[in-house]
Each structure stands twice: as structure tokens, then as C-alpha cells.
Length: 259
Image (cartoon, rainbow, N blue to C red; front, top):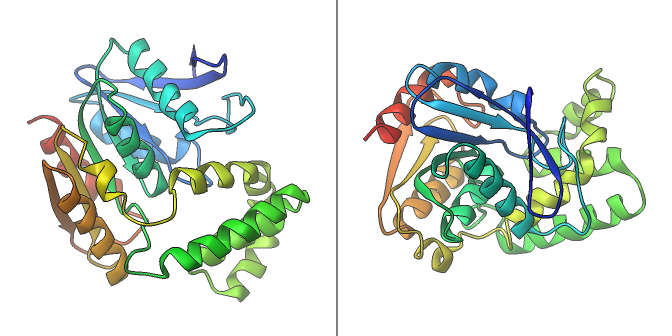
């Protein structure tokens, strides 16, 4: 990241802008930094000025206690202001919940696209999310960052043996380093269910995208987001799962953001 802006509470935010044209801010999900969405930015920058950034507590960005979802909305407000005062947003996974909340909060957002925001209405539901919240809060309070990461990976459906193998991988230290931000993404997801009342207040066009190779519950949750937004639409990408290929997604986003 080669640029920095300051959020309302004084937190420095590292970001990079590539390309020219209308601004699009890419919002990463849990256990990720701006680098995660950089390949998508590379496929959009011919038509848009694309911003990737490290969410607070990750990468080159700072962090300021206490955390609140409203602070992350203010982070997006600071980035949008730095980019000229208006932007479209794209959020992947839990980053989609943050992008939608930013739009519902009245930020100068012209369009919002999300990919498979994992609301659990059709999966484990609120009870599973509540148990995850309890266990995650306890693990982080006790400094058990590795256990916090393992809890998250289990929530995503990763098998125990795969989690055990991941603990031995070179990537594990980096995952532990940003483990405290799992609480941030958990807060962004609320009670884990589609926030229909909140989405009803989003007045800009919303595109909710899912992959046809993803679990049925995730596709249904994505469709529910589109149904709840007054100007929502739903799109399914062939041969894609939660780890969506930027090459498949970029043309869909370009059409939507360029409309």
C-alpha cells in the first residue's frame, strides 16, 4: 500500500488506488488484507479507479480501541472522501456485510455489490453463530489466537484434519497475527442473519452474487440479500464457489458499476 488516510478516530488506513474513472472500493472479508482483493482490482482498473485497503487491525493499517462496526463505516467514509467524495463498493464474504452497512448508514455510495455474504438463515442459523461468538470471545480474551483461527476455519466448514494441517503451514503465523480482527468481522455480521430491515433502507442498486458450486444455503442467503434491498438483484456465476475467480467476477462487476 502506498497511500494513507486517517479515519475519524485517528486510525491510519493504508490503501492503494489503481486505474482511472469512477471510484470503486473493494472490501475484503475475514482473515484477509487488501492484497486478497488486489487481483480483482487489476481486472477492474481499466475502467475504474479501484481502491484496495487494509481494514483496521490488518496489514499496514492501524487500530484504535474500542472497536465498533461504526468505526469501520467511518473508515470507508474516509477512503471515499480521499477519493473525491463518492464511490461504489464491492465486498466479499463478511466484507459484503460491511459494504451494505456503509450504504445503509448513508455514506455517498452509488452502487453496492457483494459476493456470498455468509448470513446463516439457511445454514446453521443464529444458534450456531451465538456459540461461535462465545467461543471466539473466550479464545481471544485468553490470548489463544491459534484457537480463534481454528474456530473460524471450522465455521467455514473446514474439516478438523485440514485445520490441523493448516496449523503446521507457513501461513499460520500470519493468520494468528490478524486473529483479533475475527471479532471485528463477527461484529459486522451481527446475529448472523440477513438484516432485512437494515437492507430495506439501502436506496442504491445492490447486486448480490453467488457461485453455483457453493453450498445451497450460501446461495439462498445471497438471494435473500437481493430480495431485501429495494433495488436488489441476484446473479449466479457458473463453476464458482466461495473462492471466486476474479476473471469470472470482474466482467459482472464492471457491467454493474458502469451502468
